[in-house]
Structure formats: C-alpha cells, structure tokens
Image 1 (cartoon, rainbow, N blue to C red):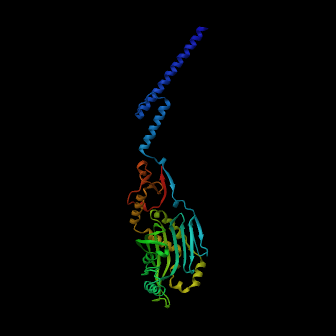
Image 2: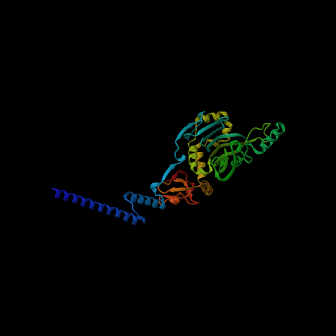
Amino acid sequence: MKKRVCVIFLGCIMLLTFAGCEKNKKIETTAEDNTEDTGLTIVGGGIDDTTESGTNRTEDTTEQQGHSDANVKVTPNENALITWESYTTPEGYMTLNIPKGWETMTLNIDVIGYQLLVYDPSSPGRRFFFSTAVTSYPSQDEWLWWRQNTINYMGIDYGENWYISPQATTQSLFENSGAFFGYTDFKLVDNLGSNGYGGDVLQATCTLDGINVEGVFSAAVVDLPVQKIPYLADGTIDLVEGTVIMTAPEEEYTNWECVLGQMFASLTFSDKYWEDRAAMQRQMQQTANYLSYQANVMSDMIMDTWEKRSNSYDIQSQQYSDTTLGRERIYDTETGEVYYAENGWSDSYYGDRYQLVTPGSEIYNLPVTGTISY
C-alpha cells in the first residue's frame, strides 16, 4: 500500500514538473515574439507585462503614422443646422422664410415705403434688409440748397452727405447713406453689373455694430420729378426702390450667402400690399414701377449676377481669414462638404478621403458646413 502511494505521489510531482516546463516555455516564446516585433528586450517580465508593453508600442506607432478615417469626427456648423419657419409682417404685407431663432423688425413708413430687417441675435453681422421704396432722398443740388438753409435759419449743419445719392447711382447711395442703413466704412469690392430693375449689384464690405462684414448691396436709384414747391430747389428728389442688403461677417460670408439668398427668394408680397400702395399714391406707382417685379424674380437677378462675380477677392479673403484664425479648410471627397480644422490637422491624417484645400482653390467659394477633428 505504501509503495502504491509513493508511486502516485511521484507521478504527480512529475506531471507538475512537466506542466511548469511547458508554462515557462510559453512565457519564453511570448517574450521572444514581442522582442522580435517591437525591438524591445523583455527582462524578467510575465505575460501581463509583455502584453502591456506590446500594446503601448502599437499605439505609439499608430500615433506616429497619423489618423485614419475611423478617427475623424465632424461637428456641423450653424449654417448646416438651420430650421426654417415662415414669417409674415404685422400688416400682412410680406411673407418669407427665416431661420428659426432669428429676429425681425419692420417699419411701415407710408405703405409705399416699407422696411424689413431680419437678423441673427447671436451674430448681428448676419442680416437681411429689404426696403420697398424711400422717397425722401434729395438730389445733390437739392441737398446743398436745403443744407444751407438749415444752417442759415436753424443753425444746424447736417453735413455734406446725409441720406443722399449725389449722382443717383446705386454706388453713391450706399457710399453716402451709411448713417441711414446703420453701417460705417463702406468699401466697394466690385460692381457686379445690373440688377435687372434699374440699378446695380455691388459686392462690398463695411462695419456693422463693430463687426467687419461682407455682403451684397443693390437698389434702383432714379431722379423723380415732382411739383416745385418753396423748399425744393430744383423740383427733383431721388427715388430709391428695391433696396437689398445681405451681409455676414467677412470670415464666414461664403457659409451664409446661400442662406441669405434663400430668404430673399422666399419673399412675397400680398395683394393687400399692392392695393394699399396704389391707393396711397397712384402717381408714384405709375412713375416708378420697378416693384411690379415679384421678389423672387428680383432675387434671381441679383443672385445670378452675384454668382457670376469675379471670385478672386473671395478666395483671398477666405484664405486670409483662415490664416488669421489659425485654421485650415478640409474637403470631403466623398460628400463634397467643406470643413474647418485646426491648423496642422492634415499633417497627422494619412487617409485619402479628406484633402487639404490648397491656396487659390475654387473650393474656397463653397460654404463650410462643419468642423472636423479627431
């Protein structure tokens, strides 16, 4: 019996010894494999140490190579998340679609003159302004005469240019009427040509509430003969109709021009407006008939001219903004979307889908719809 127990005991010891050798053999094999793959020398480590070291080295290697498409995250911009809602002016004269959250202001001057302002309270530089008609602009000669009389009889000098268009042109209107429209430092970038209803479409920059903005400015300006009365020097005033101002901060204008254009295209007038306007002054409607154009026709004319503009200024302007703000522009070759990224983002990306927008590229004229990151 004792011999049998001893034999069994010795057999167990031998099995444990063989198992221990096999285990050590596996550890040595693992260490050798990791040493060969990573170039590291494993000293006295176990399975846990080896696995951790191997994993860390793999992550470091990936980091050095860069990021793949799987690491890329896109955060949509505001202009890509717009929810549209219909807005009708208090008198029921105009209806248009506006981005949800934007605010509106209206001014009913005399039915003939009606003003509408739509703006983004989170970024006041984003705004859409439309005015049907303004008839209180004196001609240049008229203004000089009126100015001198206010100095002589009231002791008040309103200045050389005040709500006037000296040469009855679209450009002179906007150059001299900043106080009326609420901006300063108007600078013409380009006259893009006729708006199709008696004026021009201008590309310009200005300062609005302390914000440097870029935009579209358009209006029809004509000399309107009126019956001569004592306080009019030559019996003419300048009539301004169909005034359109669409702006956004310079560095993001290309992102918002389509949004502003959609607002303009959706603007419609009610029959009640035309009836009330005609009743107020039929002669005015017959003399200046520009607004018989529907607003969407006007918007098509203006936006068509805008799309044909020389885009060299826009490209240079957007490149300058990116440099100033420390960002670069990335083009998604699969979706056609354009994104902002931190400067240098493309240096750590090794995929093919996302491409850096190079200087001078036409892609700078496309709206940016999001921000890309890892």
